[in-house]
Picture 1: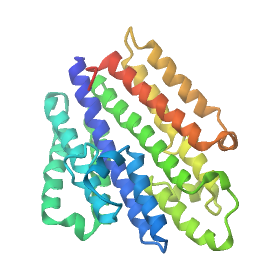
Picture 2: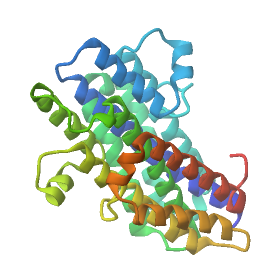
Picture 3: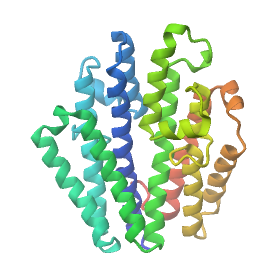
Length: 318
């Protein structure tokens, strides 16, 4: 396959997944902002959201303070923000258009319709009227895009590069979400919550689990009250949890194996080593050595994998 075609398919999927993950993070912040909390805690939540995506400097150039509506507008429809939902959906559609011939009609129509519809919705003020419903729509369109890809595309190199982009992006975003949300709650003080904290904690952790579609999964797996260390275990180490780091890396390794070439052996080795670290890790060891340090190192390794994949298969410097 031409590296330029592989590049467009890979980035089409990454941008679609990024739009979904941005919607998920905004949704969890929007839902927790409706809970009773101090202005300082609320501000920290919105600030954390921007730091997850490494967008604080860009945001601060344009805004004073962290008002919920300004942060949401910046993350949803600001065209100068390359990670806004609007920018991601445009980039996904442009990449799809560039390789129209490598996609099925259904896969192209899904991307194109999403782009046309998001513009119509933003012009009509749907987002301002009901942010939660808008975020659900973005998630639904991403689910639809993945489902159509899986259900209609030949399982060849085009398919594998598309999947590779999806799961590398998912691993990156899940790690960022877990890191910022645990960091905000001073995860080193696990188990020291007072009685009055517990009700707030329940809603906070519920919102985080819902943001990665894991609330019902948590209930099914643990059948217990929500505990931070178990949330960490579910989102990092469970191979059977679709949005966990372990499950995402398993997909990255599988799809890398399908597209390997004569220069990709080192990239495969590093991906396999990162997967092995997740397979044999234990959550108590991760927490004992520091969750923030662990996730920071994980993100560095995922970003390096992304760089190596670009060098080995794609158009370097995208």
